[in-house]
Length: 176
Image (cartoon, rainbow, N blue to C red; front, side, top):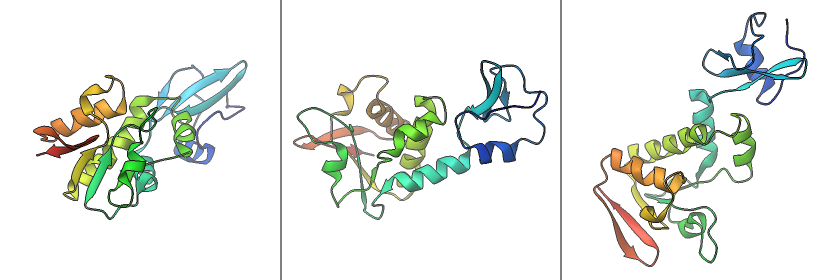
């Protein structure tokens, strides 16, 4: 059975990666690690199950703002009664921002935070490879365990961070 409708994701990218879709009739199958079969009524289609490395690179490039600064600002995106990490970054820090595109990109992988984290993690890897200094606009240890702020702090520890030193009002520097 050939699919009669394509659901979610970039149709052109998905179609190009699949040469023969006759065997793809069971919902939930993962094809080549990236495409998941989905059913809506009698229609069969596909959505991305995870991003390709090329997509991650593209989204990291899109999210890296402005990019040439020697410092990186990480933190919370929306917090009542305080500035976001983007506002705190100003023109002196590189920061990660997909803006309005975040939700659209997240829909491509069925809302997976883990897949969105892969983009964020690659941003951190790229900035670390450039030997940039890292800062947090919000206390890293006050984030919930599933928040990206918490993941960022834990990942920096995995990369060798020794401490997060408070150096000002709502400003923490990563000590390597």
